[in-house]
Image (cartoon, rainbow, N blue to C red; front, side, top):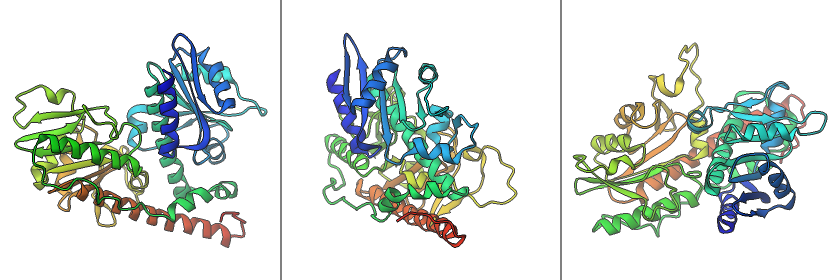
Length: 397
């Protein structure tokens, strides 16, 4: 278990989800196993004795959401409800534990961790539960971080950020100044000669998608259609660890392999049928996800935009549609608008396709994410400029 603890501590730092050196994992089998920041390990040990769980992950997120969310929410608010698909599907909402008279009620934190995947604790950070495995704690932490990132950055554009919030945005502005590089020359070139070559190409493309931060945790999927069969990553598989996690699903469903395939199998099939593509990559680039949630439609009475909106909107030239995950609206709504081999699902992420190899969808996904980063930077700059014009000293740099 100590190898698992060390592995996922390093992985969270590699993912860019936490500040370097400010994460801890605490787990128990016959003994307590821990790794990471001493003060956070101490909190984890105390909580683990109260929570029926195998592991806890505690970390200070890269952007200090533990300080920022209490500033932007009403004082009585005790829950955060981002609009992204991960929140709707896996989290529903995120509990916020506030300080009272400068102190945290750790019994309250323990009670919430016994019921939820994780919490955001004011002044401390994200705490996630691994009920059965250490890996589960990592997945839950990554899910919480993704949801909090998308939700907070959307708030900065839709609401009026406070001066104290703008002061904290230096790291974000620095990140936005550097586009994601097109590191694709070493990705296997197609067409692929055989099933072995396809599997290796899928593993390589999945690894690169994670390395470029185009997907978090265990979300996203990848496939190749060849010889009347579809090779697709399994449900719950991590894109950077796909060896042995790719299913071969015949077009005629003559086997039961589709039972363990990605829940997005119907969407992949619909896209192949509509476009003539041979490869598909689905990721959740953060800025594309959050920009897909922006809508300037006036007088709209649709309550559930993520599944009921009939409009096709655009991020630059890339279409955005609504649709439920799996066999729901994604398969029906997305394929018809993917003439250029790329489309976005509201709050969910990008599907990109290619006709030769995975260099094509990766190129399209990176280009779109960079466009969304530039557009977000422009809109955020307008917000900050508005503060400066009103005489509020932003303190950002």
